[in-house]
Amino acid sequence: MTPTDLPPVRTTSPRAHFSPRSNWMNDPNGLVFHDGRYHLYFQCNPQGVAHANLSWGHATSTDLARWTEHDPAILWDDEAQIFSGSVVVDHGNTSGFGTAERPPLVALYTAAAPGHQAQALAYSTDGGYVWTKYRGNPVLDRGTSDFRDPKVFRYDDGGDGYWVMVAVEAQDRQVLFHRSDDLKTWTFLSSYGPAGPVGGVWECPDMFPLAVDGDEDDVRWVLLISLNPGGIAGGSGTHYVVGDFDGTVFHPSAPHPAPEPEMFADGSQSREELEAFGWIDFGPDCYAGVTFDGLGRHDRTLIAWMDNWEYAGRIPAEDADENRSAMTLPRRLSLTRDQNGIERLRQEPAVEVDPAENVELGRLTGGVVLADGLTGAARIRFAAAFGDAQSVELRIESSSRDEMVVIRQDRASGRLELDRPGAGMPPGFARTPSMLLDQPAAIGWDVWIDALNERVSSVELFAQDGERVLTALIPAASHRTYSVNAVGGALSGARAAVVDIRG
Image (cartoon, rainbow, N blue to C red; front, side, top):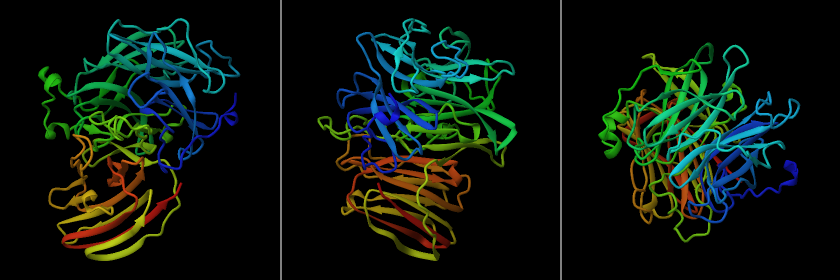
């Protein structure tokens, strides 16, 4: 079977994100770039819209924008559901499942049964379309109930190298590191945690090197940890830590103190405490993000699940027969060092849209309409200096003003927030996520809006050159008007560009 034998099932909506044609979807799994194609595997229920029968769905793309959905890749069975994991290209055929000329793709995933989770293996010799479960499964079993989400990568030790697995003991808030020479036999290396945010179980880790400001002589390692609940915006969230990895132990640049045990149970970390940690996203709807294997260091690319466990499964309503949710935009990752010497993760959209010319607005008082009557997806870029304005707002209005979404940046507090309405939405949806900017006097937004299904759309806001990102679902609307308002004074040097993204 080849990719051309598999019919495309990509729908026209959403237009800028991947969403399955039907049924349940959650975490991205097994992201890998191989033979010129991006492979996106994901948690799915091939039999319905409930979070059940978990298997790996599969989609491919050549540009990260247009996706072809294929038949499910790895199916659940009577022994276990197929929880999250990763895929690597075994170029040296260390596993013995392929040949040196035709290296296999190897998937490490969590085989989940009631009261027991262990790591299992499957392999593909046709480029990632047909998978065979390994007869020797599980390949790593600690005999525990919450050991899951293996992310595997090849570590270069200056010799032949070896495989490293990063997984979690979720309830213990620990990341565990193991090594292998053949992807089938694993030995323990070390652990990290508990540390940092611990208000929910730890899940879906990832770890990778990045050059700081592009300097290959200054390379650091980034450890991603998703947690639920306990995220910065409530419910699900993804934390990151920067440090060094010597092939055995991860050493954070700025170690977080060990939390008090009661924090595990009551999630009592304050907003101020949470803001001291690194976050992939400050919105409520970016979870379980992981990166592609098979790309160069400068092309490190992440995709996350665009939802939150506080209401996932209730949008659309529980009896709907539509697909559930979507993935975030693919995001290119880099590291930068701020004026205080702290390494910051930077993200930018990894998809291209036709450029739009900037409209020079100059000195702006009051409001101005940027676009009226747009449907579906749009990208809005806006930049200005505060002048004497107290705040600036991007208003996203539908035909019903009750569903108006407002992005607001306040000069005095330096905070950028998104106010989304919750009328007709599940409990926990209405909230105002925010992020504190390091450069509060500068206004520079890159906003992506997409229609996901009949109930919700999405907003992804990149600010401060991608050092601050906020992702949130918003109520759906058939038509939208976008306007910018200067509040309490005037903005200076304002300019904007709007792109209508068509399917």
